Image (cartoon, rainbow, N blue to C red; front, top):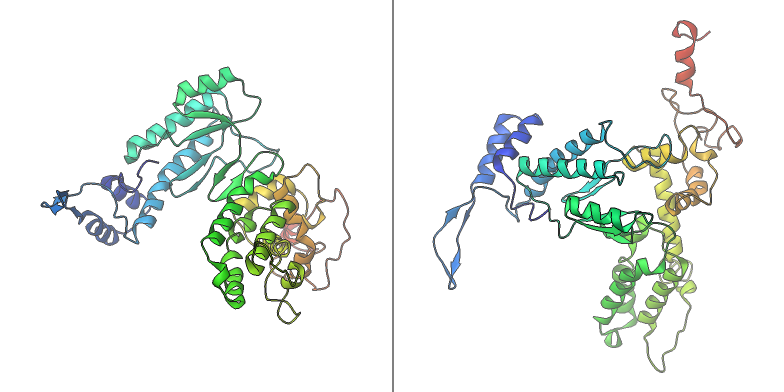
Length: 391
């Protein structure tokens, strides 16, 4: 979107909050907070009077992001309603998989659909309809439609004339700071991460630092830079080796005559084990994998429902075998399954858990792993009993 905060229509904002069921007292407070905004233009360096604003949100107001997120729900609902139409061709992956029409974070939106002319035209009409209703404007110079590699140049040109956006074959791109790519993981996807660490190191004069100062920076600054990407992505091993070499070079110095007195494997240990309290990147990735498995088993969210429908719709997650054709994200989650299951224990409750496959005893599951087994929960068996009671 183009300047989303500046183009918020106040009348539409009040209508959306009323539709969400907010009380009139709170809406009145919101109106007085938003509408009390005046600007003073600078002419030749001198403030010349004031004029009242009639739209937009204050940039430094802590309430503005929340207001914008509530208003962005209008666009999300329009996309979901469009996806429910029979004439709309969705982007299918596998049978039984959760159908996702879009992902949105503030004013950044990813829309998933088929690539035919009719479907793209429906998406464009939905965007224009929301644009007229909310007063927002789509920045088509920064908007891109990614298509698969089998799209011909003629089809790409036809879509370009239809929507007025750039049409590209699905190359790597960055969304919310994480590299997105189709196919195998490549080292060049993580070049910005390595460049960011290099720029931070070059900005410090580490030759004048004490070893203790370099250790603090390495532990709390350089070591924290890749954490965001490592929590969501699994870089190739050569990328991890390059990052660890940068850490070693920063701590021991670089150039002629330097001496490396200890390897990174001995440094990246806890102080109790004789190390420096640093963490090895593969161990950090493994810890994040275990965390993803724990979230997969204990929480409910959009990505969990998506993985459930794609990989274990009719099976228990502990019985799923690793498939070489699966995505690298799913393979990474499976690597943390063994350690995660050892530390997961379920309590007996309403019978929604499997008595054979869940670790409710603390000693592991009762049933061995068998391929193709179907699950019958306790509450399902109880509901199918004659009369709804136990025999």
